[in-house]
Every structure is written in structure tokens, then in C-alpha cells.
Image 1: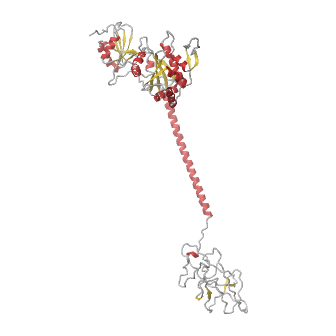
Image 2: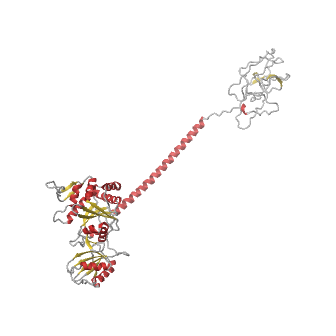
Image 3: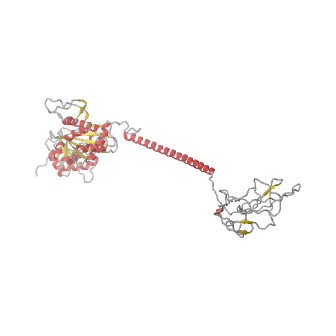
Length: 570
């Protein structure tokens, strides 16, 4: 503890330590009370001023003592004190004077020697960094006596804010713990999200598997369990059907087939249509398919086929033999099983196509095989070869719709407006997907010698593959009627004219075994009223109407007998 009076006032006269008492406390020199006021030199005032000493001035001259006293003792620690700044954020408080302790009497009196004159103190320069001490050039005159002792100027003090290393360590630790907590929370959140995503994926996988098994007929308890290989599926089915006509420009013949994509059973099928099948032309007259392609064009033939089979055909693809050759070349050839040798048109040349399994055909050989029909050979043989070439092309065709579109565009053929290049490419890509995995087959539409659909045999093709079904005619729909002539009088043409004039659509006529009584057959109870109207139109009795099996998907089939009277000329 500093025993000096006013230790924080740099201008207050500091007493000198002359010794220490028996308790080790410093003993200060008593102030002179009878002396004249101390004179000190003020370098800023330029003259001596007689005033009460305010503090120690290191530049003032020390006056010798007037009365003899005990010789001063040298104290190596008796340095000039200086004031310490207060770091209290409030007011600066001046140090209070402490009572001066009276030195204890010496054991024996000692004759005091005259005090030696004190040499003038040299000017002391305040050490750097001491608060409250400024250079001489910047120090101003001492404050007046009437100023408050606490009226210190702010420039007399210097506050140094030292960095606290411990606080930085604490902040770093807090940041570390906070970031670690955030990482743990983020890890837990990611874990929960992964669990939720996994559960969703598992649920979707289970639902998809159950749905696939149910749709494929493999789910236990399903009515179609064990029905593999694209068998018939119960319930409504979605189909995309287009008709393709192969025009042999060299021989002037045509070949027709339906390309069916069953999206429900995921089965592709090529249905071959003989040219001898009887269809109705635009006027309702009976004609053959081959003649309809030549006379009625693509739209008329497409409508006639749809009416005959009771199915919807979305578009027509006319494929001339030069384009078929280019198509086979664009897929780098095909590989099919051939049933006969196809000779070259040049004499002495090797056959274009050899009979055998997995024969590789280029574009020219594929066209020759698809159009070849030996002399006296049935039309069905040539259609089977055409179907084989179609299947070979689909196996090599791209199942990507965009790549398929590029292939069709490179052919540069003129397509029917009902089936633009993009739609044709999309249909062929779906069929190609089925053909690549073996879910594809080729079927021939059974037709009798008279061109009519055979009974019973047509159901597997018309109903199962094409989805044809006889239903009650909708509002504005004209009922379709077919005629079989068993009268022995060639009365089919006369009956056709009567039916067309009566407002019915004549689908086709064929010969039948001769019989005595005529019959009007309907297969659905909803068609009974139509059958009664047909009987009245033909002049047949009501007893001739009976429920039976009409031809194919025709609403009503008329079987003429000997009792049918051919209308005479009017």
C-alpha cells in the first residue's frame, strides 16, 4: 500500500522518505511550516510565481532548507511516485490523504549535522506510456486553485484494452460445440428423411408388384392366373390398330395386314387379311378387300374393314415395295425362317432366298420373299411370307420413338394423312418392343371360299385379338347386315338392294347350303328389334327371326331359303 498523500495527483508535492521505523513503515520528511512559499520555475509562464505548491514539478529548482535537520538518508527505493489512472467507467476519484505517522524517538540523541545543500534536481522526463504525463511542448499551465481536484482532462489518461485470450478460447469452444450440435441434428434429420424415402420406395415397389401380378393374371386368386404368353384378358382392353397395305409395283398386287398393339396384355399381333374377304364399299355394296384398296382408296378401305370386324382402325400405312426395301436396308437386314426358295429374275442366277431357318435377307431379298406366290399356290401362303418379313423388320426396328421417327423420315415416303410420320414411328416402336422379347404373334383371318368370315373360327381373331364385339347400335348408327344365299336362286344381290334401300348397311354376301325356310339371326338380345325390322324389309315372316350366331361381329345375318321371293321389276 502506498502511504503517500495524494498518490494519484502528479502535481501534489511528494514528501521524501527519510527512513523506516521499527515496524518497517517508511518515515517521510515533515513539511516546513515556517518557510516562505516555495518558488518554482514555470517554463510556460516565463516568471516566478508565488503561489501554493500544487504538485511536484520536475523542472523547478529545489530550495535548500532554512533550518538544520537530520541528514537525509539515501533510500534507493525513494523514487518519485506517480498517479495511476482509474479504470472505473464512472467518475475519476481523487485519492484521499492518509494521516502522516510520527517517527518514533531515537534511543539516544544524536547531534544533527548541518544539512548539506541539495543539488538542483535534473529535469526528469516521464517514461513513455505513463498515464497523465505529456511532453513539455504539449503541457499546459496548471489549473487554478478554485478548480475541482477531480477536473481532469481526458487526454491525461490512456486506456489500453488488452485482448482477452481466454475469451477467444471460450468463443471458439462455443462455436465448436454449436457446430457439432448442428451437425448431429442435421445427421439425425438426414437419417429420418432416408427412412421415410425408403418406406415410400418399399410401398411403391410392393404396390407395383401386386398391380403387375394382378394385371398379368399371376396374382393368387386371379381368374387369369397361369394365362401366359399374351392370352385373352378379361375386362376392357386398350388396343392401337393400324392397317398396312403392301403395294407390289412390279406385279400390281396388294397385301393387307393389321398391326395390333394390345397395351393391356402387352401383346403385339399381325393379323393377315386375305384379299378375297367380302367388305362393303362406300355405297353399301359388297366387294372384295383387294378391289376396295384399288377403288375406294385408303380411307374407304379402312372404314370397310372397321365395319366388317367391328373394330376401330386409327390409320393407314401404304408401303410400296421400294420403301420396304429401303426399310430393310435401314435396319441392316433381317433374319427370318423361310419356307421356300425364291428364284432370281435373272436366268441362271442363284436364288434370292434360300429355304431354311434364320436366313439373312437384305432389302431386295426381303421384298422378293414377301411378294412371292408360286403358281397355283393359295393366297394364304404369300400372306404368311409377308407376315414373316414384317416380324423380322420389327425385331430390328428401334423401340425408341425418337430414333424410330428418324428411321421413318429417312424413307422419304408419302404417308396417308391419317398416320403422320411421328405417329407411325411411335406405333412401330411399341410393336418392336413386343417383338424383341417374343410377345408377338402372327394370325390369319379365317375366310371361306365365298369370302365370308367362317363361323366360330373368326371369334379367336375378331374378338380376342381385335376386340370386336356386337353391341346395340348407338343413336344415329346404321345396323350392319350380312346375307347368305341358300335359296338356290342367286337372290343375294336382290336382297342387298332391298336392305340398302331400307336404310341398313350391307356388309357382305356369301353362298350357303340350300334350305327351305329363311332365317334372320341375331346374337344379342339388344339386336332383336333390328332383326325384326330386317325381316319385314325382306318380306319374311316374323317367325323367321331367331336368336343364333350371326357372322363375325355383324349385328344381323340373313340366311335366304327357297321361301324368299325375289322382288320383281316395278
